[in-house]
Length: 335
Length: 158
Image (tube, rainbow over all chains, first blue to last red; front, side, top):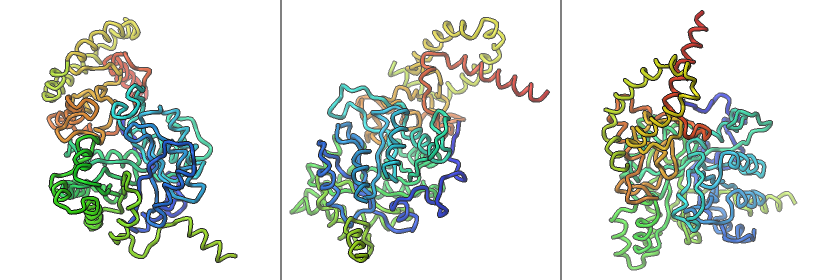
């Protein structure tokens, strides 16, 4: 029953790249990549999407547009990514298995790639019970693993899951999520191995607040020989206060925040600033871990501070990721 | 039954051995299934399978049993019907994010697999569920597939 990705047949541009995106280029060049989560608007107004993206200008290599995260309804990921790619932004389209079956998902992947999306993150998705439409039917026709295999099949074998051929494959860089911070801890590195076998090329993790747990996960993954096979971007984010942290670890599935972090926030004069300092320190410490290729910043309702956090962490060095102003500067040069 | 399901996963080794003894019998009975007709055998065997596995594993009769690769914890009881491992929402106490009072099916699966001799099958990527097979007997399917592939091998050898 094992179906690995046929690496020899992988669609590539001669450099071993499977997409023409900037995220893959940055990662393969060995530069420390920064991705950020973009909150989707509850609106049909494209300007809201652009306004939300603008706060990251010059500090992130790609933005993840979430797909009904927390099982709450928002603008779709494919639409947000398509809007943003029109302006030149690099996006990661998130695909969750909760709301669509394999027919719908494959159609969206082809459509997304046609609209200029270079990266796809394959997720299982939260259960409908935690969101704002608990009465909805949970689909889960595929799981994150079979979704990865399906999209890798579209790209590398140029066939649908049914075996029917495509004329042009979607040239996408494939990502998956992992959560090293929740049980069963012993299985997590093996699960990463399965995701890589299914086609994952980069991994964005759940919030990392527990460095020792993360190091243990990375050590085990290294022993399994996984770290040469994919790029790992641990998730980070600023905590607004000790109360928020407490609420998050109680109510947001999969978020693990050690007591020490909460105590440090409680002891701080300005908890908001302390939350950002913790985030900066974590980014700097994560960068030192072998096999970490970047960070994924999830700053829910604190998006405005992301640029400052990245700046202070110093991880970009003198590199400035693409922003629309780069195009304007080029246009001026040519004029 | 939930408590029985947990008990079964915790005794995964016993059920692995039981199934290893049982499977060749079902396969050997291929001539019987063939003479009765697989379609006609489907009803009584399906009922029997549903009864046994339903009681022990809360089997949902997906028709493509993966218990050997899931530490004898039926992954169809996961609210997300994950076939390849736990989601990222497992609670720190090892319970389910959707039903916080219940154990995560995959936490049980991982522990069960560690007790089995062939437990490493949990590391193999499983295909998505074929929804056409829902409600059908996995046992008969195994018997049919095994004998048919055996017949093909014999023909190829000739």
